[in-house]
Length: 238
Image (cartoon, rainbow, N blue to C red):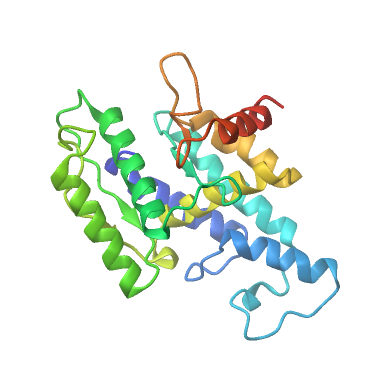
């Protein structure tokens, strides 16, 4: 998304939190929705040491509506393009975890660079949710390595030379990415609420090729796997 629209999106996101009477300083993670659902389904009390304990008196359906309302803000940005990369553990060959992460980062960098080609005044800045000190260093080092090397892209002239770390609870953007990834995962598993959110709020903004094709452009399996692509295509068509 354009940097000029960032402030507007963030302010509207905070307004939606207020409308749902949710604490502004707290992050509503996608995983909280389903953890809350499990406890409520089983009529169990949520332990105080759970990160989502502050939601103990909220119906998980309200939080689904909150996520849906939040992602609806993307419709205000008719130019926005979403790119999702996915790995199927079941179908993935024996590849090291670091190599898998490298392939995801490389694929995202390449698609962003191709998207911005011809827009000389634009520069993309990448933000990522930190994981651990060791993993964060790996992410930043591999990003810089790919940037310097160029790899299959001759020159990353539209991407900033360093990867930025941003805490998810302090970043509306990271939270939006969490909702996008979470609802897509739920969509693949056939969950009704996830399918509705994905089809209505995310699918219209997926990056496409010149022929309108989503797979390989807005959704990309890592590593390339025709079987996985066919499975995703079947779910999209249904």
